[in-house]
Amino acid sequence: MKSISPTDIAALPARDRILATAHRLFYQEGLRATGIDRLIAESGVTKVTFYRHFPSKNDLIQAYLEQRHSLWMDWFNAALARRDGPAALADAMREWFASDDFRGCAFINGAGEMPAEPAVTDAARRHKAEMRQAIAERLPEGPGKAEMAEMLSLAADGAIVRAQLDGQADAALAALESLIGKLAG
Image (cartoon, rainbow, N blue to C red):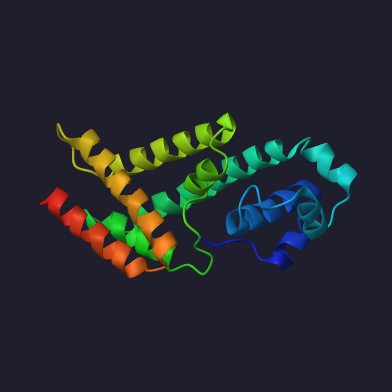
């Protein structure tokens, strides 16, 4: 997944500029760590403009998570479609882990940062359900399809966390590929 460059952000309308700035900062630094004043300064808007578009930080977080979900799922579905067979999932993860701005799953990170915020945990659940569905759609029909999709999505989440925490995508991908081979074999 590729993020928008700061030059491209500057050309956007105010609401989109705020959201693009939030997207970059929330993903790189976290939901809690990113303050409103920094978002306002880096998006180049006034406080009045910011609050006109997003009455609270939680409103901005929800808009960010909706946008992140849409962008990530578009990328994920396209990445899976470029490949065939059980290796498609590991290949898609390899592509994402190799991106310059990889910092794990925004939804896992967000739920970990704000576990008491229902909007964040609900967004994470919806995201993971749609990810699981995207994986299931590429599996062969059969009685164990839903269970296989569940196992593969759980394995992908584990690989995401391991690649982020260890900083060693190769080890996470090797484990994911091995597990896929055992499940598919």
